[in-house]
Length: 318
Image (tube, helix red, strand yellow):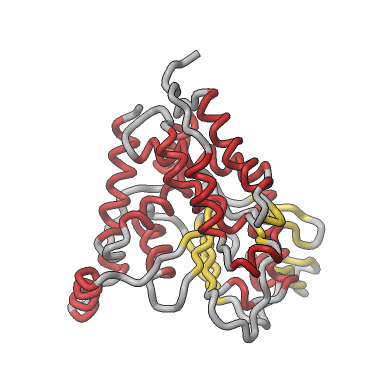
């Protein structure tokens, strides 16, 4: 493993931790998703640090970031850009939208129209967008961090399963404990903010870290373990729609990124177990039987992780 890449990754974590207090696991998982080449959905109530986490990551990595507050009147052109006729030049000129960046922060993504969500979906899946028949590539790297409030359905449009599947992980920040909330109150009243974070990485450095992650070794037994966990979601009596093959790939990449964040160049089953809920939670759809029995997605995934046996051998490079 390249020590420089690992040290750079840890520098990002330390900087973000200055502002996002008491949420080290969330910071680690969010950054792991970034270096795994995925997009992030943060689902939680307002005021727990969703946007602060996204902005802090962007600043620590010196990425060009744009933020859009999604509302019902936001149109695809507000995201992708538009062409305007230039009379003096007798031609149309393209004006880029906020999607032309490294990190796109979509605040309250479920409050915009399905048409606008679909426009963002194309960019997330294809790595490009099309305006007036011209396709343009996203910047490298390109990350979408979207937030949504699961409470209160007034004025919201639920994300379809096809779009949820494009997010590598879905995580929840949760309320801080007593000690951490006191620290947050002290920090905010003393003026600590995202602007206090020092840029410690740039886009080229992030690309180098991603290359190191792609070199992390995964034993065939670990591949089999991941697939068995995924298949168990499809066979569970309480699940109507299980994790897709895209979810299998996401789980593998996240496990590789998590192993890298632990200072290893190989994946162990505990890496898979650590990130499996974040990868699978938003990808499964519960059936009527689950609702009647009051069985949650968390219950199902906990049962699956407890029932699928971990491999004993996973380090030999073949």
